Image (cartoon, rainbow over all chains, first blue to last red; front, side):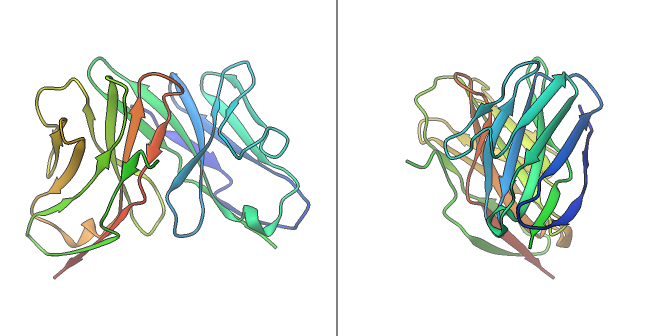
Length: 116
Length: 115
């Protein structure tokens, strides 16, 4: 299995600024993802964080707004750039752990972002 | 089109009774995985159970079991002997083995266990 440490756990930011969220996994995992959960909503995939290369973004999310890094197998960052109140959400890092007959997608504890 | 559908926005169950949370999915990929997660009010996402599309038997994890009906494309979660601590949001999710392999989540079901 895997334990994911995500920080900060929450932040209040001013419009127009940027915030970088860090995600550290305690073991090597095959894949890492970033999700957004808007208030009262389900989880929406932002992007797949690829080790050593550009992230793969989902429709509606772009690199200029959500730059992602993954320099090694256990660490990734998500930056929310030029923030607006519409970016207020919970941002979740996740990692896919795979065994012979089982898979688990573990989640970090999330970053509660409020933009004023 | 919705890939994961949870038709029950809210459910109530009496403590110690069993409850079934519905989930249907849509995919043309022959190989996929189905997951259930619990999200309490604290916001953390807690993995509950996994079912692979080629698994012959329904998955079980303690009080959780997954009623997998492949032909009907349904993957209902059964919680036996409900406890007050089971009150939470429950999300069904699917991962297709082709493509990006990330999970797609349903809209969730809010379960409230009553004493």
